[in-house]
Every structure is written in C-alpha cells, then in structure tokens.
Image (tube, each protein chain N blue to C red):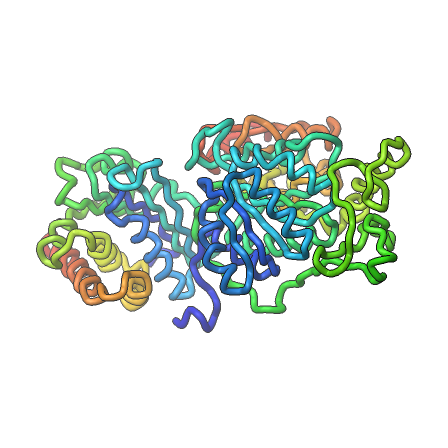
Length: 183
Length: 381
C-alpha cells in the first residue's frame, strides 16, 4: 500500500466526477488521512470537459495538483486523449469502456470496465456511474477502506437514494473483481 | 471514525473563509456574487441568519462595499467578497473606509484579469491593486492564505486586525485556494482570540470621535444607534470629524493614518520560514504558489540543494524587515508568482541590490508547477 496517491478523474460535466472526487477525499479524512481535492472546469458545466483531482496521503500535502497520476479514471474519449499520457510508469488506468473505445495507453496498467453501462442497466440509472466508478477504484487499490467510502457516499447523496447508491457501490466492487480475475 | 468527535472535515477554501467570518463575530455581509468567490456569499446567506446576522445581495459591487461600511458604523463586524472586476468597482468606497477609519473585511478571490479576463482561472494579479487600487497615499492591510485551514484562521485574524486598527483588511485568496477542498479542523469556541473594537468611555456629549486616547493612535469608535453622534466623511478632517482645508490638519490626519499602522507592524506582519537556516537560495511565495514552492523546497533538498522559503502571509504592509534579514544570508532569491511581476519588484526594492532577485512570472490561468521552480533553482545555483 503506497503512502500517497495522486488520483485524476476525467470525463464530461454531468458525470459526477467532481462529486466523486469529493466523496473519495471525505472517505480519506474519515480514516484520519490527509486529502486535497481540486478541480477544473469550463464556464459550462453539463457536457463540457470536467476534471477532478484528489491527493490522499498519510503525510501533509504541499502541492495540491496532480502531476503524473498514480491512478487515472477516464469516462469520456476526450478525457482519455487528454490525460492518458500523464500517468506514472507503474500507474493504473481505468477506462470506462462504455464510452472510451480504441484507447491503448502506452504506459500504466490498464483496466477496462463498462462503468456507465453497469450503472444504467444493472443498477438502473446512469447518474450513479460515479459511484460505480468509486467502487471500481477502491476495489482495485484499497486507497481507502470500503467502510469509509460507503460512509462518505451515504453522507453526501440525496435522501431516498441510499439503497441505489449502495447497489452502485457493490456493482463497482463486483465489476473490478471480475475484470481482475479475467485479466 | 466519527467526524464530529475530532472536528476534522473536508472543506472548501471559500467555505472556510465564510465560517471563519462567523467565528470572528461577523454579523453583516453585503455582496454581489462573482466567480470564483460565489461560495462565500452562498454559505453566508445560509449561516448569517442562523446566528442573528444579516445577509444582503446588493444591486452591484459598489453598493455592496458601501453597505458594509454603513453596517460597520453601527457596530456590526462586516464583510464582502468579490473577484477582480468587482474589486475594481469597490476601490472608491474602500478608500472611504480607510480615511473614515471604518473596520471591514474585503475578500478578493483572485481570477485571471484584466477586465472580465478568465472567470474560472486562478491568478495572483491583484496584488498591486490591493496596495494602490484606491487613490491617494493610504495605508492598507492585505493578507493571503495558503491552505483551507488558514482561510479560516486568517479570516478571524483579518477581522481582529481590522477592528484593532480601524482599517479595511483585504483577504487575498486565489481561485486555487478558494475552490480546493482539504482537511480542516474547526477551532473550538474560545480557541482563537477575538478582538472587539474599542468604544468610547466618555458620555456622548464629551465624545471627540477621531481623538486618539492612547499611543496606538487608534481612536475609540462609537456605534451609531447607541446615542453617540458624529460626522463621517471622506474629506480629510480634524478630530471632531469635520472637514478642514488647513494643511496642518490635513497633514496631521494623513500622518496619523499611516503612523497607527506603523506602530502596529509587530501585530500585522505575519510570515513563515521553512528551511532557511542554511539556505543558499530563498523562495519568496504566497497564496497557492507557496504550496508549489514548498514542494520545490522538498525536492531540491532531496537533491542536496540548499533551498528555503519565506512565505508571505501578510503582503501589505510588505514584510521588508524579515526579507532583509534573510537577504544577508542567501546567494539568490526567486519569486514565483501568478502575475507578470508584482511582488518581485517589491522584493528587489527591499533587498536593495544585496543579492540577485529572479521572478518566475506567469499569467495564463495555470498554477506554476514545482518543476519550473526547480529549473530556475538549477539555473541560479
């Protein structure tokens, strides 16, 4: 388990990646770790490109931006193109294969998971794709515990959607488990 | 695992600034929402009514500044928040508050300018405007936080300085610090000092509003609505508050405005040194750039390069003395800043040619990464 994770989440506005980044950082803080979350987005929110960054560390964090990522998640072809080279040699890349096709990163260990389709078909609503993605990330890396992640998710999602979000989280963990055993 | 028991949580810089204002006792906010400062208004619109305060969304930036001056005169600790275009519009009333000695806190979450510029892009381009944006030879206090924790604590300090010295205090955030979220531990009530403005000890009939009562040269301030009446004006005036054309009176008023700040420098100037003891190269940085510089110091040290940092928490008045002392010891100074050269020239003037000073200046809406600072260190060593 590394002491520090630089995580970049890229996609389009509306996919919930900034919320996803916030939840991940909140989970880290629940565990007593340090976390910084930052973002960049254009003037438009829905449909425009969107990027969230999270650094999680046992030590205090000085520079708040992700340089070369330890983990990159991309959920749109534009984001894949833009960010796929900015990962560490031994980094991890997760591609949402629902939208990201024909992307063969030159470095990093690559996992292709049908995140948005799983959210839409298996959980019932694509709006929870970000939660499925968090399940995939944490299932693969253990960057935070599943317990802390679930607590952070439930503290942030709208009332009445708890069960759907729990289902999305479980679907994410299941999907990465299958992806790893298939690899 | 219980968040509330340890009081640690994830919070955005703008939100921490708003919560710091509540903690400091702010009970009035007037503003006109503008990116990237909007969250401050958003949080205070909810929080102020909960603590018996007032939030007003005004018709524009100019009126917002005027409203906080008026509210402060009634005794309410008052704040507004804005960004570059709004900061420009506030300058006239800001000068009014300086001259009439009305405490208030003005937050500027800096974005890329000039003009409408880049609304979502970070910048540190308003540093000189903070110093000289309003006309005439006025003093000012400007401070700049580098973390979410500091957004909270420095806002409390900004209110204290403002009330203590009866002067507007400018909280110079930048988009990076305003929008990033990180871990914060909210201080318990009573943990941070809160300064309450001095009010007159004499009866209303004996009150001379601008007559200092001690060596601080800061006169006690009566709250309107409590029976004291006095004349508030943007004209230079005597101790009664009424204007005068006399060079002696106008000169004395100007001198006191500056002298009260000079006498308070020990309280006002805040800096932080890191790894400066044996440093050959000194980085001078503030706001979000101090985070990039901190990383550069760490990575340079790992390579065996002796690099240290002076972080400016107070920017105006400029911490000249702290800088001069370090300039005696180092071989070069590097100033990374997200503008085309504002603080670097002040640094040059302060060290008076004793040591070479280099700027890393960039105004493209991106934070200057540690790599660029490391390159410059290689170059000057």
